[in-house]
Amino acid sequence: MRIVNLATLLLLTVVLALQWRAGSQMLGSGLSLNDEPKHFTSGVLVYDYLRQSLHSKRSSSPMPFAENFEAHYPRVAIGHYPPMYYVAQAAFYALAGPSILSARVLSALLTAILACSIFWSVKPFAGWRTALIATLGFLAVPLVQLAAWQVMSDLLTGLFVYLAILAFARLLDSPADWKAALGFAVWSVAAILTKGSAWALGPFFLLAPWICRRPRFFRSRWFFAALAVVILAGSSFYLLAARTGVGYPTRFSHYLTAGFFHRAEILRDVSGFAPALLLGMSLLGAGVALHARWRLGDESRGTTLSLVAASWMLSQLLFLLVLPMTAEARVLLPSLAPAAVLTARSLVWLRGVLRIRSEWLPAVPVLLGALLVADCGLAPLILFVGYRQAADAIPYSQNGALIFLAGEDWRGEGNLIAERRSQDPRHRDVMLRGTHMLNASDEKGVYRPILHSPEQVRSYLLAMPVQFVVLGRPPFDNAYQTLVDSAVVGDPADFRLLSTVPIKNEAGETLDALRIYENVQAGNRHPSKIEIPLGFDGGKRVIEFHWP
Image (cartoon, rainbow, N blue to C red; front, side, top):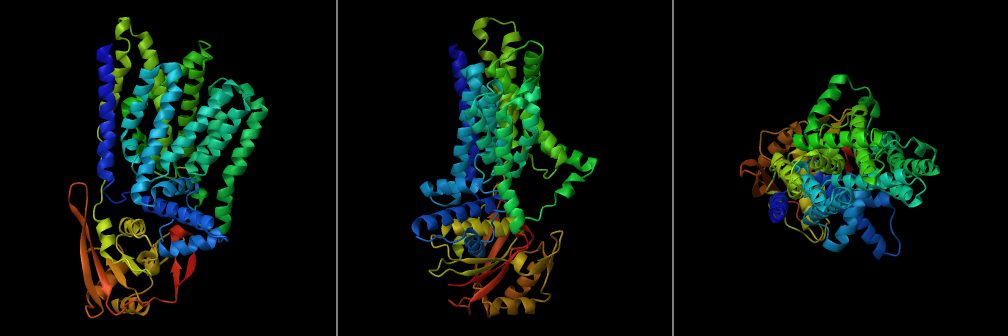
């Protein structure tokens, strides 16, 4: 038994080392995913609004405040994404301050909370060792190694979904338990208001009672009460966003009419959300639970929880088949905690069917846990270093600076905006995205330049006047960037090179070099009014900003 305990401790150490390896490297790098800068700035927006409301006698309306914030930092996701993740960020920023580091630490804390939830929910039917092994299997999944340190909403969605299905499992076993019904409704609404993919709780709500062999649940008054609360409260934000026209103009008909091959490609791309051994153990656990309930009449809470976990994973798959909205594997992150439950169920079954000496039975989950962790391996890190240095290369002024961004679209512009807001205590800059300012987008989100010569672009920048221009290095992805490059680099009398900052990846290779130019004639002058188009990802709105 002592050897088994030492092996368990070693496995725990290995998994924590995997997480430490990812965190130690990601904490010092820029934001790596497309949506991370938007999630960060949106959380800061909510934090700033709540702080202003608490410290002033008269709070401003949310919409004008948001538009004013977006003029300063035009990389906001509220509208396209629901607000719950940003409320969670704002609450944490009140304790730790609004910085990218704080946002990453929040993700790590959410991971720890979800891991503890898995352990305590599995322990009653699997024992502490098997529960720990299943939890470590969850933490070792490469998707979780990365999500624990990324500024993304998928992890919070997964936490709320897991709490919802835990409450639903209790409700299925005790249909008169109004506290369980309330818990399911509250956590379901929280998940839906964190990310739209949580609407997979709809098919789950209908499938789980049948799979758990609880058809009488549909006659329960709590079934209709929970359903009404989830639909009414969960849809409120989406209806408001559609009415006000914020966020992406999403057309669900496009996804509903997607063909078979498109859906097959989506399933192929997301199928790697978990290692093969974990998926196999999950499938085995689902089969064991189904056999126990439907053939052996096992009415235990552990079997119900296992079947509810399987119901959620099936519901997410069906939801993605109906609405194939993304090919990113992280959309299935909320299925990893249920997969850990089913893995624990399969470990319990294997421990029971293997005919070995009783003193060696505890070694079974440890050995299989070691295989699970080995199958996970090291998560492939994608790191960008240099954006913080580029942000700091632009002087921080008392009244803020007018900064024109003409770098690579999502990575360059988004990271500069996030880093600038994270580092500047005054947050008075106005940052203009060249993608939107010098382009027009059509109904399909395709951008085309509205100015057609370097002379026109130069006149535009000088007339505003823009104080700093940030450029990547050629070759450029967009035509307008070539025009800005010719206008700025070819005019040393008005624009002087302030700094050049290399952008490197995890291997130390230089991906880009951000060149920062200063308009020497601008001084401290600011335009009295700026019309700022937010582009396709901002609902094609145009906001009017007046410099104070």
